[in-house]
Figure: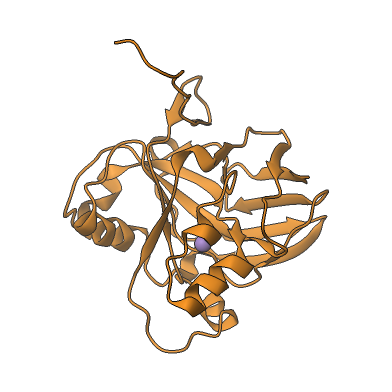
Length: 232
Ligand code: MN
């Protein structure tokens, strides 16, 4: 097969303790999955589970011990961090029962769901789709995956994010409204999950704006933390 234009590389994530890398197929992001974040977004009452996606080429692979770069995007003056516990799917399936969900998980990582908040809220207020706020170039930094085969499936663990050394998000993944097995079960009703899919499980309170020059650090439990510099 001769391609008319050069093919692009798919992003791959480091795997802790392995020379192999994890190719990313799709990026799913769960919304409003922590009570305190719902409150800070001014949302009261029950919200059913929902998901949005980012194009896979927006993933910024972060390597252990390194400072990655993340470009501040165009057309926003309010580009915000959201630190999220991130699930890497190793085995596909649809209509997966929650009790079987862990069989489908390769491992876990720290991810960010960077958001042009001004454009997201504009779209929301207009009743329009959110893509312009969420599906943003370089908006999906993800760190190395720790395989479930070596770590198991954490259900507790401190989630934190620092901007320029100041702690801005501090929660625990035990606060997820819909925990990971429920996310796999719910999402696999709507999509046939595939190996390589990653799922960002939602962010707790403490979202806030970045600016070029900021250093963002984030972690979840024992997972490899990530570090990024926001660039012009
Ligand atoms: Mn999010």
